[in-house]
Length: 233
Image (cartoon, rainbow, N blue to C red; front, side, top):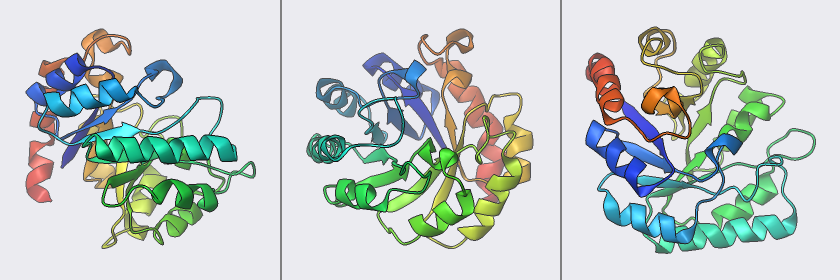
């Protein structure tokens, strides 16, 4: 069972690691759903923790549709992130027709090399999640999909997530479930879906507020709740 925690600062990163997080998603603009953090922040976080740091590559929060110029910027960001020593990148792009933008994805992946690649919640805005997952199966560099099952929260998307788990069983693709998960609902959610990776943001922050620091005690409590499921895996 992998617990990924959103970090927006060096302090967040240290606190998440202290609590027992297995991986970080490093972002800026948490209220915008995450945009690319500064190169300086990436460098500082990678040096501050021992756990893997996956970095958001998203030039703006207007949509998940990008111009060619924006895609070139994303490709350059991936190159720099790789050179700064991060473990992976978090990317996602759609066409105006709500299909996966495979041309844009291939352009950005051209600089990813051996980086750990997550396709983020742009996936949830695709017109057909199962079709989108089938397409991503053709990209071995993409190791997981961050998803709420096409719904506002992962709790509402349990049926879709369970279907996605079946579709991607014994493939390179893992489902990273996120959005709306909390210490109070995670046990039931894991029992219903069987996911092996979970993504937490406000659910492990002080007072449940997006703009507060990560609470290491909440991360530790989450780790304890997930421990029986880790043994099952």
